[in-house]
Amino acid sequence: MSKYKNIVILTGAGISAESGLATFRDEEGLWNKHKVEDVATIEGFARNPDYVHDFYNEMKKELIDVKPNKAHLAITELQKNYPADISVITQNVDTLHEKAGNENVYHIHGQINQAVCMNCGNVIATWDDVTTEDICQNCGVLGMFKPNIVFFGESLLCMNKVDELLRKCDLFISIGTSGVVFPANTFVRTAKYHHAETIEFNLKSTANNYDFDKHIIGKAGETFPQYVKDLISCE
Ligand code: NAD
Ligand code: ZN
Image 1 (spheres, rainbow, N blue to C red):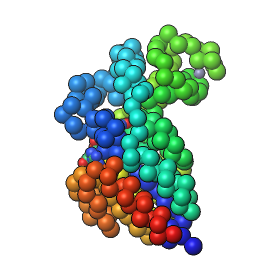
Image 2 (cartoon, rainbow, N blue to C red):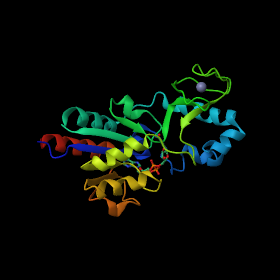
Image 3 (tube, rainbow, N blue to C red):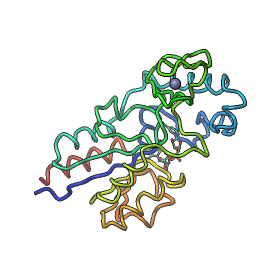
């Protein structure tokens, strides 16, 4: 009998930092070079869809060849070698979890290699540029694709599933998220309320400090693989 039956791993920009991606609040972060209201709101997109498509097409080019790091790979190890249902809820729009072979990944903020037709809801996956010239193969309407990235003011994706997972989990692990972005910063409380053990991996203690039973401070690419090794060897 394994100690945990249902494990949820929440990840944020910090898990991808060691793959060379800037985190949100980094001075070098992509977001700091553009106004959020221009590139990450529905109003900005309505005002200038070409500008917004250019921004995400550019981001896509930056992300296409980025490799997962040891923390992403350790999740695959855990999923393969620990007898529990293990899901990943990520705020990241990169696809490093998939590249690492992680399964049961839920992208609550969307993902960079997808676009959604605002006319019919058709979601397409592509690493090519998406533009206002594209026609939806499902409904035949021109110029209605939006990057499948959740903009400010939009609902998050997969939230029914996320809620179900949080209520059921007996171990909640958070990796590399600052705990300031709503609603992901409330997930730990839901899990805890339903009696999960809670553990955080971060470079420093975060805004959610008091919600975690345990804090493991350091680079996730170093601390998390060790934790996974210990967890598997306890079985
Ligand atoms: P954040 O940038 O607000 O916080 C990142 C956290 O990771 C910080 O607490 C930092 O201390 C920690 N961290 C940095 N390097 C680390 C490492 N090597 N090991 C462990 N922890 C480390 O990120 P957030 O909480 O995810 O919120 C930012 C928002 O920006 C999210 O909504 C996300 O969608 C978006 N974003 C995504 C990406 C991506 O897809 N890779 C990158 C930047 C921003
Ligand atoms: Zn369509």
